[in-house]
Amino acid sequence: MNILLERQSRKPIYLQIRDRISHLIKSGALKSGDRLPSIRALAESLQVNKLTIIEAYSVLEADGIVSARQGSGYFVNSLSLQSTKLESTFSPAQNVTILEPGKSSFYDMYTPLVQAKTQLGIINLGYGYPHPPKDINLIARRALRQENPDIFFSHDMPQGQLTLCKQIAQMLVQQGLEVFPENLIITNGSQQGLSLAINYYVKPGDWVIVEAPTYYGAISILENLGARIIGIPMTAEGINLELLEQYLHSHRPKLIYTISTFHNPTGLTTTQAHRQELLALAEKYECPILEDNAYEGLAFQPVPAPIKALDKNDLVIYLSTFSKTLMPGLRVGYMVVTGKHYQAIIERKLLHDLHTSSISQAIVSEYLASGHYRRHLSRLRTENLQSRNTMLQALEREFPDEARWTVPTGGLFLWVQLPDNIPIQTIRNEAFAQNVYLACGSAFFPDKQGYPAMRLTFCLPQEEIEQGISIVGKLLKKYISRGHERISNYQPLAHSI
Ligand SMILES: Cc1ncc(COP(=O)(O)O)c(C=O)c1O
Image (tube, rainbow, N blue to C red; front, side, top):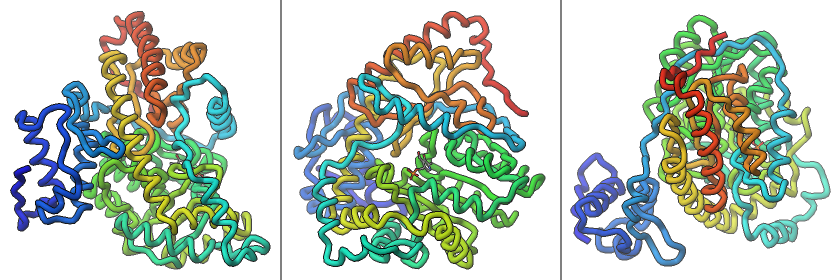
């Protein structure tokens, strides 16, 4: 394959390769079904590292142009797959939500999702956890057989096992976040990290800024604490920075909660420039940031380093978890905390539960040590990317033209924005009667309203995605055609309170 590289160019080599291959496909020089050169062969002929080729192929895959086939390499996709709408069409109304202390029940939101997961025959489009790793028994047995079993028979340090902290620090360095093991705290899932950080920074009555929509587990902690919540709308680029500044200025909040990579529920990832601007605003108004990147490990293509990587003033707490990549039942998450905040958070962690389960930590540590985790992640990414593409195609085929959706480059979800006046709860009930479980968008807004939307997980078998989307698409079309008069004058729902 003839690819001329400009080694002095500021454009990264992997993107030059991606552009050239993409051009060869578009010009017809490479046809649907053609096999791309093997990673090794192309790396040798271009005299670049194999990782550069892997990155280029991963981006082509995320663009929907090629697909990996297990053990056989990368192939050019058929035109129908290539023409899948890969541009996000998401463009919601930009209304700010202000919520005085209230109490929604996290229990009421969380339990039906988990119950639906265990119900046989249900296509669960609402619940977002990965397929379990295949080698868990082997890894767990190895973890328990380790040289020093004493660690399981006594209490441990509140910050977590040093070996695991070192492994996570190394992993984060590869994601562009340079941290030391002494900056890490192993938590009982990232939910505990959220709770520790929020309770550290926020007191009852304080204003806190969240993205709207956002993860309802964080909203519930804030509500239960008696915080006053400002929901700043998400644009296709991330939180609306102009509105953010207005509210930082007028309300002097005590915390900004953000999910910068594979945002739950929209699946959006912010750019490097957006991250820099967000941090600059936080610095200007001296407002700490809680960055919750629970889905960071599930990227189909390279993502910018976390905001924490830009933080020179200990203004950002970063947290993540192994729940979305390994297993939620292990309950292992982690926080990166720098400066004086580290000791203060550890002391809180100690008061909560002394420390995170030593056995769970040992299992995660064994995964990281053995290289199984890296292989598992790469398998998950390939599976999830294929599932995402299947879902995008199904949406294009089955959903009404009025629906708009995001196109995530990783994570587990995408977000569908629907026309005003659509009876989303009725559709949800009717879908459930046909064995399809949906997560309504309202749960992700601080005021539990927002605009009509749904979060769809694509981490499902292909047949389930196609069947589920077809059922929901028919219901949407039925209700849209009934209310066509009103919907043709569609204005997204205003919901300022
Ligand atoms: C954004 C986000 N943060 C945190 C969590 C909590 O995850 P866990 O406590 O299992 O690590 C979730 C779970 O869905 C989430 O979506």
